[in-house]
Length: 377
Ligand code: NIG
Ligand code: FE
Image 1 (spheres, helix red, strand yellow):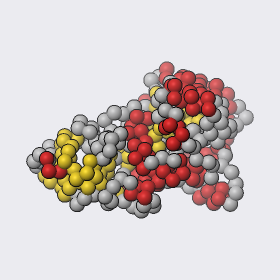
Image 2 (image 1 turned 180 degrees about the vertical axis):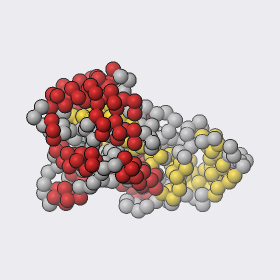
Image 3 (image 1 turned 30 degrees about the vertical axis):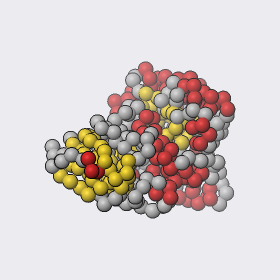
Image 4 (image 1 turned 90 degrees about the vertical axis):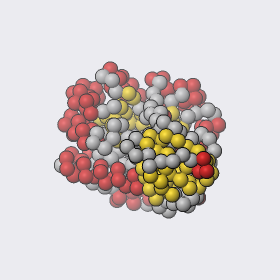
């Protein structure tokens, strides 16, 4: 395979934990970063691509999305903006539409959202099931998602579906039994929505334990709408990531720091539900590891844009642009247990996002502007 020299890079953020290199170059070969350094010191390659002073960053790693769905809920969003509050139960609207959709319709929708993400610089995305909520619909959701990512997550415990509302214990039995058995071959991760109106801590613990017993690693939706016990559960189980973390007590923050569980912050959700933004700056100051993800879904947050989430994290959650981009690249990779993405050091996968801007700072400085000019890998 031929090597490619990317040269005349105005700013190269190869390692999101270090300052960027100015006037840089890099060589890509066989899908990997082979060389990184100053433009004037660059080696020869088979092909050369002049980036005319543009900035280069690692492709975004979006570690939380719900792309297997049909229908849309713009009326629910409009009602929220008129004063209604967000509740977990809205998920059931999407469940009905998803069950009624064909495989082809669901696949086409996943594909269009993944392309939309890629156009905005995302090169890796995690995709959850969770709008099927029958054995068949959860298994097919994951089988369809698997064509787009290796990071598929079984979220049969998204909400108790209508047909089980009077008997949630039986639904948990279904999730931990036949549904898990059908879903597991198509999933890498297992997740649960631990929240008032969805699943309580004991149910979430049972679901994640059942998943672990068949080899699925756990992650959790927690503390999105209330300061419940989900974050403590994630820390107790030593999960790699716990997502939302909108409402955190001091004990939750201590538990996150001590466990090393990554708090995946989803600022698009706060934007779209008018909830308060979590204090990302304070979490970092207290030694908590963070990631930023889109949570793209038709209910609580219908954005696929990591640049938008970065801009929100900077403006509303107190992060510097460097911290926000780090959380959206290496942070997301860490939240998925991946070490070869989320940075562009030598040996990393060549997942490269080129910005039509001289610096990555423009992602927050020019919010809402389509700055991604090219995506490689
Ligand atoms: O991550 N919190 C639970 N699940 C989604 C919302 C899903 C929906 O409202 O349809 C979330 O916000
Ligand atoms: Fe979610």
